[in-house]
Amino acid sequence: MLSGFDMALKNSANSQSDSNDTKQTIIVNHQLPEVVVHPIVLLSVVDHYNRLAKGTSKRVVGTLLGEMMDGKLHVTNSFAVIFEEDPRDPRVWFLDHNYHENMFQMFKKVNAKERVVGWYSTGSKLMPCDLEIHELYRQYCPEPVLVIMNPQPSELELPTDCYYSVEVPTDDKYFRRTFQHVPSTVGAYEAEEIGVEHLLRDIANSDTSTLSMRIGSKITSLESLITRLQDLAVYLGQIAEGKLPQNSEIIYQLQEIFNLLPSADADLSRAFNIESNDEMLGLYMGAVLRVTMGLHNLINNKIKNREAKEKIVSDKIAARKSSLDATVVAASTDEPKSGSDDTKK
Image (cartoon, rainbow, N blue to C red; front, side, top):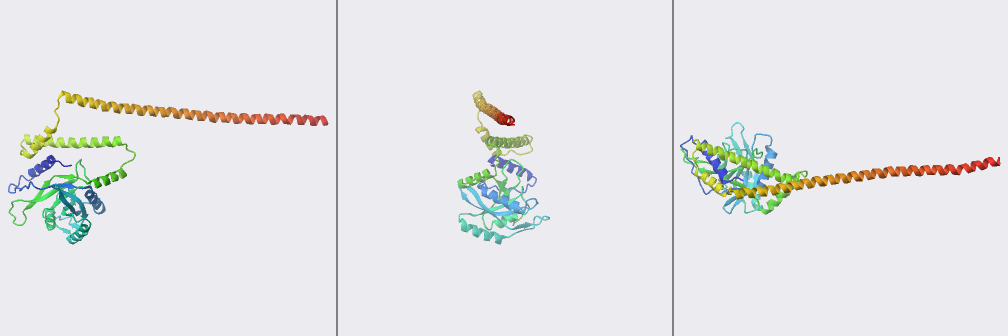
């Protein structure tokens, strides 16, 4: 989830990259709603990318459907559209808006509440023709949102970046808009959560235990936290050196973060140590119990194998003894017959 602090950091970085162009001053609209992307949209975009552009440098484009709810824009559905662009000149592109209109009419028959709220594009950054495509979508939605999704993210963060177009004072009388980044999250309804859980259950590795999965998720969270703290340290260092201007919004966010932190007094540290020791003791006792049960099963197995081996040996001895006794009895019965035959002669 991209927090307000992450959004502010990105906005500050964008303002630094545009600081050389002093003639443009972005008119920020603070009433732009937060974007909530639902899991079915992420799955649809990944499927679209894998079918058409996986292993290539191409990108795919599609339409986003959703509705406003609780002051947030919920992107609940999407569909692919026919899109082509010249790899040598990205400003030369084609989008089949007739196909888009036909698809939207069919989706509207299924769910009348969903309307066109914007469009999506795969990749990791904005392209030169994105503003022109955005203006095309303004014919179907007064304030469309652009969601850039990275199907192959390399960092420990959400693979989505959301943008609205805002007006800027420029010398161009016909084109006076630019993109502004807005915060985005991933949310789901109860039915979607159940479906995602079943999907993850099907693709999860059955050899991996629940404890190892929990530990892996904790490690991933800590790595993400370390990345955020490093970005924070770099940003504050650049402010201290005078390379970046001070941003009041980021300072307020930092103050809220520090206010949420518990006071590091002696009692709190002792409580943390006690709880950590209790958890470690439980893990240690569990490991000892697991090893003890393993040794117990091993000893029982060896005893059973030895008893089975002794039984096989005793059965062989008994069979050999019985066969020997039968041979002796047969020999003893043959001796009197031979003696009587000699007497008759």
